[in-house]
Image 1: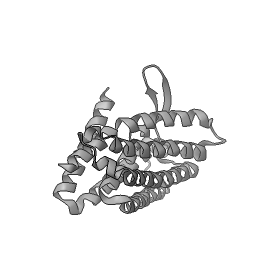
Image 2 (image 1 turned 30 degrees about the vertical axis):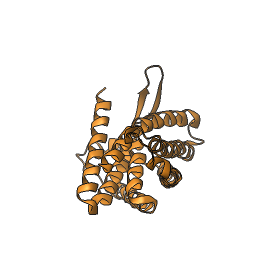
Image 3 (image 1 turned 90 degrees about the vertical axis):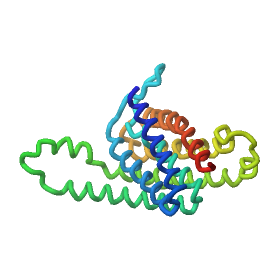
Image 4 (image 1 turned 120 degrees about the horizontal axis):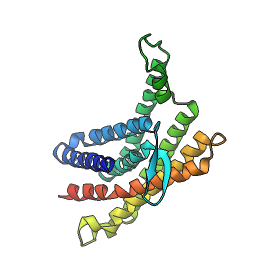
Length: 239
């Protein structure tokens, strides 16, 4: 129960903080959203090392703990796209990617140093941060493909339904065209990411179908649940 409370609080803080900066300090908006993006991405790299039980109540399966964070990544891509457009979203994606390359290089650099003789957590540290080349490549490929595709789908849907969205006479919170571009772009991102990552990282080593299904279901459930925060973000920007 507490994990969902933390999830709601962190997503709400990020949403309100983003809107505040965009409206009050517009020159810093892109920077702040990109910073959130980088933090989410770095956190997902660390959290992915822990496998958890994802309990739906009627069915349970296993998935990396990062499934709770990764949909935030897809969401912040939409937040950037909504305000700054597709071109700058792609720039933000490449910035985030560069930070993750540095993150892995720094881990590799420190791993080559000799631990102090009294440091008793060396095995645990290497177990946590000893990312294999294959998993790292899988993560990078899936991120670059899926994030850029997400940005393109979102922008295409926004352009396709711009007039209908603009002419919608009811509250922004129930505007179906806003929900459509957020949900559809996230589904494409999260589904394809699960497929690419699992296939590259684990094909021939582990049974990929159960791993794919676990990530597919958990990521898309959480990805759907965080859509109301994007719609709220859109509504607050219009005030």
